[in-house]
Image (cartoon, rainbow, N blue to C red; front, side, top):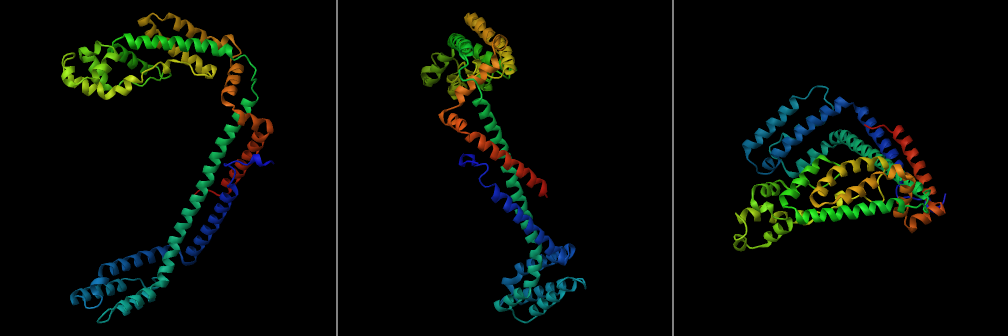
Length: 386
C-alpha cells in the first residue's frame, strides 16, 4: 500500500491497541493482588487504616513534644480504644497493636512518629492494592475509550472518503446550467422582492412576517427578539420602516423626543437590536448551490411557496413565485440527481482532491481506514467495557 494510504485516523492504531492490551494486563495483575488477600479483608483494612490516619491527623501536632498533657492522655485513650475494637482476625492486627505500644509512652517526638509510620508501611502497601486496582480500572477504561473514539473517527473518515469517491465518479461535463440558471433566476428575484419588502413595509409588518415563518422549519429566519416585536406592535414608531427605526436609534434622546413618543422605550427596545435588524436579508429564502437532494428540494419549495407568497403580495413580486415553481419542477423535468452530483463534484473537488483520486491515493486510504476499523471492531469485541 502506498504512502498516500496513511491517514491521521489510522496513524496510531497500533499504539492504541498496545496501550489497551497493557492496560488489561495491568488490571488483571491488580485484581490478582487484591484476590491474594481478599476483597473484604482489604476493604475492612482500608476503613481501619483510614480511621487511624484521621486520628493521627487530628492529634499529631498537639501531642508531639511538649504538648498539652490532657490532650496527650485523650489521644492515647482513643488509640487504645481503636486497638481494643479490632476483631481478633483483623488483618495486620499485630501491626496495629505494635503501633499502639509505640504511642503509649510519656512523651512523643517526631522520630517516634517516623517509627509509627514505618511500622504501618505493610498496612499501607496492602491498602494500596485497592487503589492500584482502581487506577488500573481507570487506565483500562481510558484506553478502551480511546479505541472507541478512534473507531468513530475512522467511521467518519470512511464516510468522507466514500463521498469523495462518489464525487470522483460524477460526470463533470454534465450540463449543470440546466439547474443553475433557474436557481439563480429565482434567487435574484426573491432577493429583490425581499429587499423591497423590508425597505417599504413597516417594521411591524416585517417582524410579523418573520414571526410567521416559525411555522416553516425549512425557512430558517431568526425569530424577532420578543421585546423588539412587542415594541413595534405597541408603539406608533412600529409603523415606520426598519431603516427609519435604525436612524431613530442613532438619534440622541433629546432629538428623538421630537419624532417618537417615549424615546427611552425606542432606545431600550430598538437600539439594542440594531445588529439583528441590519442583518435581515433574503438568504433563508434562497436555494443553495449545489442544490439539495430532490426530496429535500420538494419539501423546501413547498414551504418557500407559502412564505414567498406573503412577500409577493406586498411588493407585487409574482415573478419570484413563477421562478420558484420552475425550481420546484427541476427534479421532474431534468435528470436531477445526475446533474446535482456533477454540480457537487465541481464545487467540492479542488485540484488536490482530483489529483488524489486520479493517483489512487483516495482508494488506498479508504482501504487502510476500512482495515483499521475492522481491526478495532475485533479489539473492542475482545476487550469488553467495564
